[in-house]
Structure formats: C-alpha cells, structure tokens
Length: 423
Image 1 (cartoon, rainbow, N blue to C red):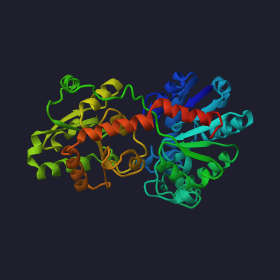
Image 2 (image 1 turned 90 degrees about the vertical axis):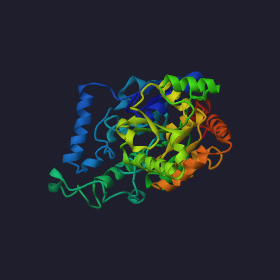
Image 3 (image 1 turned 90 degrees about the horizontal axis):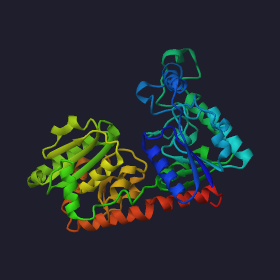
C-alpha cells in the first residue's frame, strides 16, 4: 500500500517524532511511505511570518497566544503535488503554521472523496476539533461552536473591524464554521493518541458524522530498551558524567521554563522530600533535560545535573537507561512521548494525573499518579517510588506495558486497518 504522511516539520516536536516512527514501521512491514513536510524556502518563510503578523495586527490575537492558536490562512495545496496522486491513503498529523491552509484542507477533503482515497488525521492536540486553539485551557466554548474567544483581543486594525475581537461572531466562530463546511464535504477518520483525547474531541460538533478512534503513538521498543546488566548502567553513568550509586530522578521537557511543564512544582516536591528525609540529600540526584535547565542548578538541595536540549536519540535513550525514576509534573498533557520512552527503558513513572497520562501510568503497578499543581502529593509519590521495596517490579511492569501498547509494529497494523477501510 502507498501512504502519504503529512506533517509540518520533519524533526521538530512530538508530532514529527510520531509520524517518523510510524513511517519506518510501515516501511518495515513492506508498505511504501512518503513523508511530506513544509517546504523550506523564501515563500514558505514569508507565509509563516505573514500569518503570525496577520494574527497579531489584523485578527486580534493576543501576543502571548500567537503560537497557541492558528487560523489556517496560509499553506500548500498538496493535491497539486505528485505525492498526492501517488498515494492510496493520506495521513495528516500536525499541519499548522503554514503547512495546510483552510483552502488547502478543503481541496484535500474534496479530492480524497472524488478519488476514493482514505483520509486519516492523527490529533496531537485539539485544534481539528476547535475553531482556532491548540489547547482549550479550561475554555469549553468549542463544544458549542466557539465564539467570544478569550485568546482574542480588540487590537490594532481589529478596532476598525466589528467582526474581529471579542464577540460571538469572532474569528474563532468563523473558522469553526469553516471547518464544519469542510468536514461535511467528505469523510475523515480522526485518530486521537489517547482515549482521553478521543473522548474529549467527540464533544465537538465538528466531529458529528466523522469517525473518531484512538491509537497510541508508536515507539521502537528495540531501540528504547533497558540496560541488560547493572554494570552497563554504571558504565553509562560514567560516560554521561552522572553520579554512581545514587537514585536518579529524571525530568524532561523541551523548555523547563514552560509553566505547563511544572518544573517549579517538581523542584518544590524534591525540596519537601529532602526536608522530611534529610538522609536522601546524599543518595538522590536530579537529572533535568531541556532548555534552561542549567539556570536551575541551585533550585535543589541535592545534586542536580542539567542537560540542555538533547537532539540525538541515542543520547536521550542513554539518559533514560542511566536513570531510575521518570517524573512529569505537567498541568496539561495528551499522550507524552517521553513517558512512553521512559517506560520502554524500564523506568517507573511519577506523574500528574492529567490528560492521557491517566491511561499511561498504572497506579502502584508501574508508577504513581498525583493531582496537578500539588507539590506535597508529588513529594509523597516520589518517596513511595524511591523507597518502594519492589522497585524492580515497577520497572519490569513499565517495560512490558510499553511493549504491549506502543510497539511500532502493533501500532502500524492498527493504522493499516484504517488505510484499508476495515475499521
């Protein structure tokens, strides 16, 4: 079978990682795959910049939200490309920021209907089910068709345009209605990468008449795997300049200063743990991976080793393997790749019970869940994990769940049933 996978970027972000892993798994199974991304050039650069400027000064986007919302004004008509004619099925992933415009999406839906091609859309956030936002952040107006969007403000040229700014018929409502019109012209199979997200998007009127299912993001469990011996783990620690003989708590985020990632909550939890158990100060170490980690070395009473953004997969895998417990304190998440990678490397997880994380971590079996923004509860869960009498059992259960749920071959087979129209 010939599958065209479409994603804005090739290497940046969780969606590109998931798309690339799926492409490799499908190719390994004997299918032909092409990965289509946003072209690099002056025109594409101008479209990207122009869309952001238009959002700020014409559409009335509030500056802090300029990358959290998208109106789909610019992009490529992929139906005119040879790749579209070649494909039996088209699989969209994250297509914002001048990859597909609303016009381009409409032509794609119509052409897939006319040519009988299956159209699949994997949701890495909720944008396909809302008017303009990627994450609703407590707003529920998308369940009723959007309008009066809290992320828009009357700004610049919007003062002269009564249809823009905060009103029932604002940009969010108009884009929502445009999506309704587009979706009705064909059939899209929407795939959420967690049951949580699938249940959430089904509440949107945009999903009426469409198929919504859930398939986990794939991971190569032969690449992401635990150390085979304790000596191998110690050797990795030496190679990475990590302490030997300590329990390593791993925190990973693209940018630890992103408030959504909860790094401050995590650091408070560690401080609280050491206050209760002072002896742990010399026996635990925090390893933090992500931009701006170095600036937070003094936030911890225990040893802290920072790694700025790690771009090499093999290096990231070795950091997982060298660690003991994976932590995530996010306020909002869908189905984080990092938790899957950590579990595949045999790490029990301590994380906040938000979004798809609630289906990823099995309480007391391969980790512990805590309420979001509760540093005390997080601290107590860390203590449970560190002092668990059978921590190796937690690690083994984490690895087995990764193999059963996220293995690339199993995920690829589920997608094939969609491409072939069997589900």
